[in-house]
Length: 188
Image (tube, rainbow, N blue to C red; front, side, top):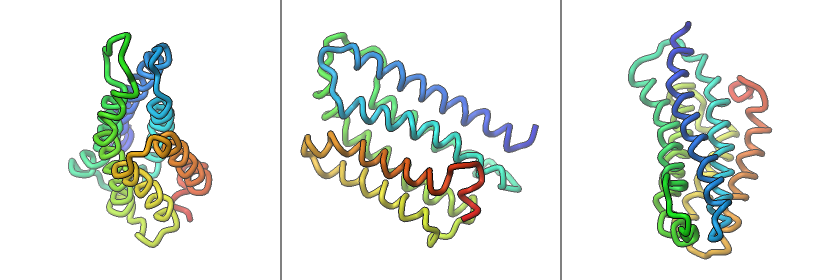
């Protein structure tokens, strides 16, 4: 087993726990009479992001020398997604939870974590993979960061109905263009 494979075990476990919590939470919200579509939409987005993180971590196999600092750095990504998941889809809510009220109360914290995650992704690829700040993928990363940041400051309900779907469209487009196969990201 290589050091990379060894380190990926822990990140994969955290990602699997986050995905499990998302799926459990989506089921709970879906069954509720008080479901709130933006919350379910973000849960779908986070599910895609969780799988995308796991896929994107393949690029890290090119790191030649791992340190504790590098490991803690990459572990931050699954941890941030797990924390965002736990805020978006908490465990053991009452059957009659008003999910709209809950989401509106938690929206800022959730989006702040997602913004930190998005910006940290830019830094990770720069520091660990030596990907230049001028790489075309940066435009997509910056777009996602700006979308999330806009959601922190804009409170219109209609905007928050569309925001997760716009974010997801940008994410999918960026992945199709730059991460359709392992290692393609670094080849561009």
